[in-house]
Image 1 (cartoon, one colour):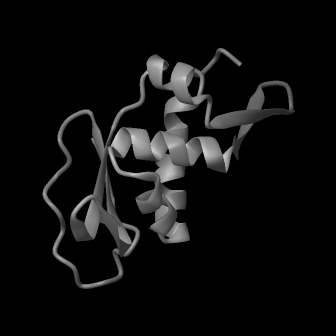
Image 2: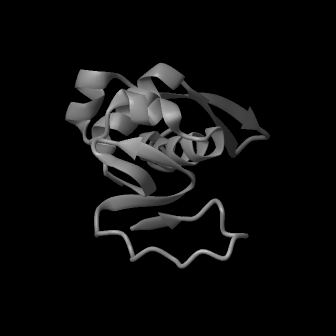
Length: 123
């Protein structure tokens, strides 16, 4: 379970905890999704291999070695593919993803990027 509140410096009440297997983000700026004008919390399910097959890989990793044993991974996010991944996992329309504040979108993207990192020791 991942709960992220990028606007934590505000005096908002914390949302209820995320459902197990879900990623929950408190949005800095509300968006419109479906019939709701005021979506303030975005909840996404975890991605699957089927999502990668149908949407594509939203993150590629630049691998750099520092010294003999230190591997540095730098994420290279494909914004179009990541937006498709966000809309699929959150079950919201593309127009809602496009309304997201850049910080909210980046928070969602970086949380999802963690699902596309290889297991330690495999790189």
